[in-house]
Image 1 (cartoon, each protein chain N blue to C red):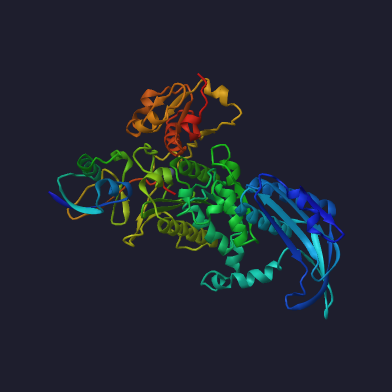
Image 2: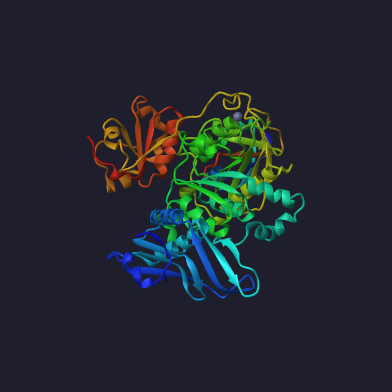
Length: 492
Length: 80
Ligand SMILES: [Zn+2]
């Protein structure tokens, strides 16, 4: 497997052995051939040149990344250099995988990345005008983007300066789920230049009806990576930084560095408090939103503003049993896409300096009744965050089977099983656990010892995270298990 | 007695099964009224974790309830 540059004709049968793998039932090959026209001009032939070392190194990086991104077996790619006539193969990409979806997706992705990234140039020889050298990446960007964004540039108070502001903007989107997908889709379509997108979760079947950037072929992939791939296809001229991790107290400051605005599209209180506190400390505006069934709540928190912060509004994180998440309450795409787009709208207003930004208020939207309310907020004079006292708590830590310190940690930890009694009796965990069905969550602090770390587990990690964040906010050191409680190895 | 038009949002709406209702009460403050409604509907959130709004602005939990007011009861929401 590898990426090669060669000056002799590309013969696909020479490379097929690189794709052989008995576990792979699908092989996809792509051939890029020289065509006889480009941009309305007749082409007689092409001449390719490459910086061979750079091109091969970058090509091999692309193939390695493809293997990390897609569930494929093998892949191989070849780029020709020198003079080529019409119909000759300039580039060949082959991928094998257990199932066809991944092979198709990976083949296309590899080809697009080679065009964008490999250090290869081409000289087109036309019938009637002088030849010219161009990078193999598509289109000259400025011409294309002028036409591309014309309809929004025509808006009042937008203009080419507005478009330039979007292009220069750096936006952090925390959470690539129900709110994150539509917010990202709009930000990218509008041409926001640099987007960091974070999510530690993988795409599950029951995410698909509302997490609109994803399809069946993405199941099991990390949300941030899958979203970045989709968004790159939608608008390849932008720069994307997918972060396949949950936002925690350890990485939050690095993620916020140089950002112009944060969109909180996460689905748990822990991340909202963390972004609120870190955003205020770093002087970065936060556009926070959350949804419940058909309703949305949206707040724009500006540092140093009269309206205060998230902690002014909600000083204490509610106990996890009191407020349901989307899984329990139910949710519809029309709610999440509407509210996610409200967040994108506020981001545009903020980046363009429009005065009708919804700051210092909460925007309540009810998709069923169609009623939107705007509630004025004011700073809470007792708020610790607004009074400059650092409230930033350390985050819960994630424990997995391959965590390096797993056995050490398990030897001295209080294990809490947050499943209902019926679930526990059907599949009891091994070792000694404190059973804690939903009814008893609020009493957990009385049962646990603050000097020993706590491990929270359930059947998927969702309940573990909600309860864990809450316990952590009360001063416990919390680890959460991101799989089934019965997968925790017995250590006692 | 005062007449208060109470509007429920998000999880409160779900727990009491209605979007709004007219309440006759002698309660002086939004918090006292919420505690009364909490015992009626078995709301899970303690009064300290609910926000109240009147006339398009949040109001303090211990502000005065007046006859004919429309009072919004808002729980925190986490879904995304
Ligand atoms: Zn505050």
